[in-house]
Length: 179
Figure 1 (cartoon, rainbow, N blue to C red):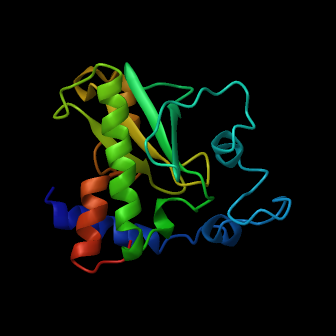
Figure 2 (cartoon, helix red, strand yellow):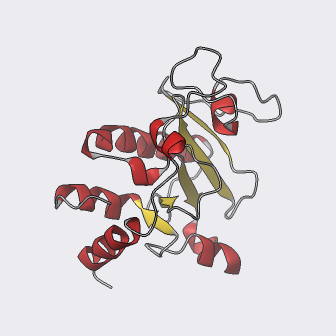
Figure 3 (spheres, rainbow, N blue to C red):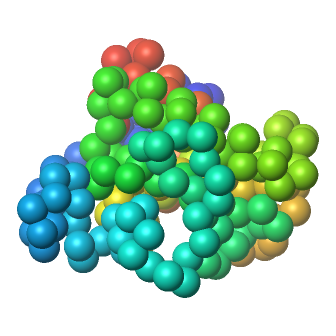
């Protein structure tokens, strides 16, 4: 399937459902007066080091955190998450392109710090709603992609109805197609 068709398919999929308003806008409920924080969101708590069981990996960007996925789909499976609560990937707009690029850079840097250097064997992307378990933007960084197991190859299938790569998301912004 051609990339433009993939973008169009995901665009049509977006009209099937509207994300929960609180998730899309960065729910302020239970935030204790902290803007961009949702106390009910596990990724908000991890980003603020309130979840002692999660080890944050060294990250050069103070607006992002990185940690290992609790159910790894590859030998290296990391999540890159904004510290400030944001809805899922369906809420991204053109002005978020620099953020997504920084998330990718952090993912690549973490891979390299963990002795993985073949950046051609990496899969980076987002789960497409309603297939994302946490309504806080998070980039999956999986490597080596060639070693994904059977279920992981399905779960992280490139540009499926449930997983969209960063490159297709960026292309959608370039052609002016709102996801």
